[in-house]
Length: 492
Figure 1 (cartoon, rainbow, N blue to C red):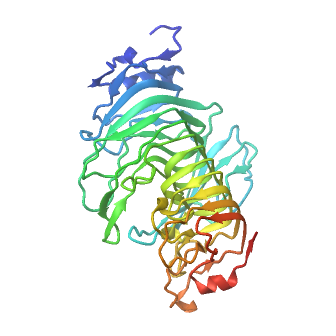
Figure 2: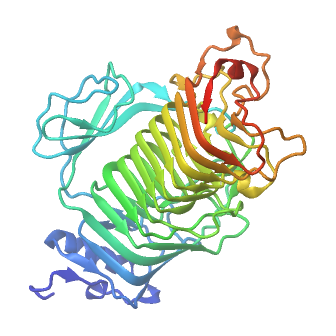
Figure 3: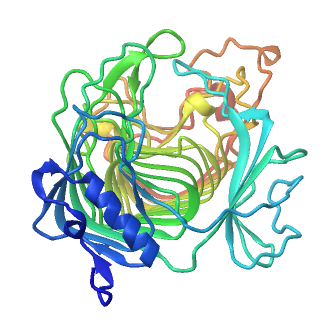
């Protein structure tokens, strides 16, 4: 290796690049050398690297340019399905922080640091997101992630109150951005057979380093058959801050069935993009094909994030599975058959976008259809159910107040619509007009107040300007008579 060379190639460490030989061991060695010497990594533009079947993970800690090199991942022959192929991580040591208590929306901590840190706190005495339905579960431990700046200020709204904190995780945030760019990856899908439960596959690119950009990457999925198990995200970011995925092409995955925790058949969610516990997660100009193909699962899932921006994207769905807080912004986007899904609190803002989902926004009923905050919709177009016959309900709000999700649940408290066109031309013969809300009770209003141990807080106000529909039918609030009586709409 020349002492003047400031980057390494995979061929320097024995990679063949012919699409047949297993190049993963050589790629591991190249990045290990680059990490030790602070060199960047550049792949040959015309190479085709086979990533083999071995249980190996490449550690990426320096800028990496895969340009137009191709990478083959054959999951029909993998030795292990739980390990990532690439892991973009920090080489900085975690910090030991002592935090005993925190309050919701707390803005500062009495702590001084040399640099900003990504922090997670957890209280395992309390479980939240106690899921309802065919994938029912006992919930997840109460936790929050946030950025703690050197002066003790907190970035990322604290969602819960902590009388006790079981554990604290603190990782320094690097000042420079790690850039991973290019690369054309093809996954030959797994053919795993397992009739009950989920067996998620990794064989992916995992990002746990804060301040990371993944740009210009392409991922294809081929070879799907009648059997297989789901993927948890080809690009999967977890437990870090300031993550941007930009100008990437991703692929939807075939939907497979399994037996869920309630003992009934369920569809398995399989993702190409995934984010868990991220503060400031940005998807910019990312695209995919066939966003209306109902045989493919929604391309992204996320949990426990703070501040999400989706801009200039064309994707089959966007989902905040177990919550988002702060700002959840969708701008200049087109979303396909699985639409826009939301659970959480703060501001949900949708601008200059086209949505094809069954609802304009699906507030997930398995987590209480809760949004504690404001909805702002501006200059958007909604094609309900991808243009198939349906009775449109603008917002999915399904919560009969009988289930404990671990937290109080809210309809969106304030809704402001300024510019929305709804293409409601394909509707039933008895269609009388679009509803704003789905009936929380599912049109079963026999429950008494005594049955409703976990009240679902109703919307407080709706302001609508510049709403147009193809049908020209009168807008309605909900099939629920009680909700109709209690809500006033300001409409011009």
